[in-house]
Image 1 (cartoon, chains in turn green, cyan):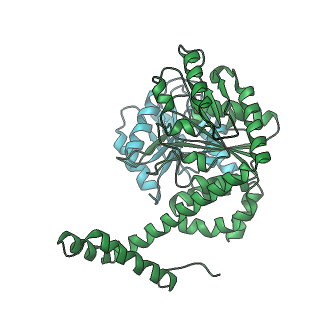
Image 2 (image 1 turned 60 degrees about the vertical axis):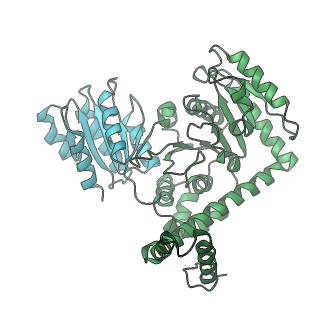
Image 3 (image 1 turned 180 degrees about the vertical axis):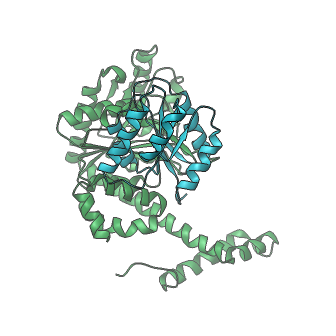
Length: 325
Length: 131
């Protein structure tokens, strides 16, 4: 059954891929068995991250570079992430509006996704979805993050190349030297370059980058007007140049290691959360909470004890442990 | 935050540029906790069905105010059938004369919501249909 789905996906069945992405989002435990078997068919695609503040032009840039990639004969998978409402759990996913022309191109697969409460600019399902689109045969996978502020930097651990899009008029030069988002770009794009303030912003970003001495890669700063297709070819050339640099310098492997590490941490957290929730279900956690509230025990000791109990029962196989090796 | 979320594609087939209603519905479904994919104006039936496949939606909501519903709605249903898709609920809204509704229902549009519909009725309808 799992192998059948994997076969369908590796044969290019878009519907099977779409359904598996849904399963990853809704019921990871069920998807896990399929993902295990899918893993052998992944690792071929290059992953480009597009990030930047809301309204800076991420979707439009994604649309335009995809069109050029298609002219070059490459197939493209796009994961477009928008935020989930913290109040209702609903989401309005509107990134496709800028990518209408791509919807009938069989060489392009677009999936809109909401964060579902996940912080960091991506959704929980992002890394698994990259693998699904990879196995579906896409050469390039573009992840468009949610519109970010200053600290949503998870993309740097998932993408091979991070394109950071800014635009004029978003604040003074101190914003540019703040820590966080401005540190993660491999390529800086100043979009809406026909707006006032573009030259100043470009200079400020260049100055900020000149002060970084710890990397062999000096990120280029490009100007684009994405809606008019201005500067997009150059952007793709720079992405190519960066990928080449990653391969030659050995940094690609290093980044993939980081990505694997992040995934392991995320998966372990997810699994422990689930184990913890079984403690909530059977009332065990309530007993501990009662003790803490009555001041019979402090929360720090309680957690120490709880952790050792959990680790013990996990290694003894008392808690469902699906590793057979 | 695992668990099933209802995914809805709100699409505007045809050439009219009136998306106020579509946006109001999209917003209401969002506020009801659904994930709403909005694709913008002037979509062909082919684009709508392909998008529905990639996004794996539970519901397609078609909005039309140009009068071409008797042509475009059945076309969407036809394409769904061609792709062996039977698990998507299709609903329609917009300026649709009363006398056209039976015909649209016959081709498989499960609900038609004309101007003046309370968005709560649409939400209720979707929740009942998508289990």
